[in-house]
Length: 135
Image 1: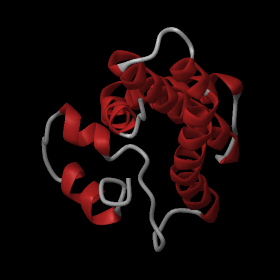
Image 2: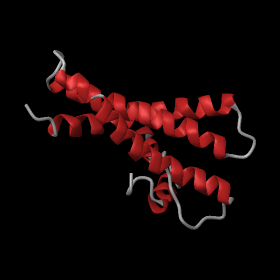
Image 3: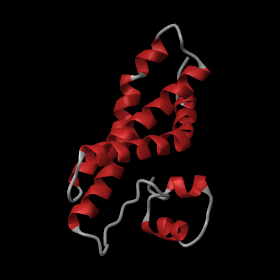
């Protein structure tokens, strides 16, 4: 997320048709200097931070699945993938209320976008979870 959410990568993706995967990687964009309002800037930066925090939290909470009878390679991949989907959706939902004129409907739509991001990109976290699994 440090690379793919960075301003230079987001500008590169927005400058042309780069494909759904490369465009999806730029979703939790962050910036330090922008012409956007402070409220929008804080919301975007907080979304990226919350995505990392919630992913770590959900992987920690879902470790019980690794200790249950359904442990193994596939279980580890799905645990990491699911944690990333839930983390992205929750981060998008919470930060939606920082925007101007927040509404529950808009927050739900943003959460759906976050879940879509987690679905497309979360397999990377799932593979990392599988690699970090101890027998």
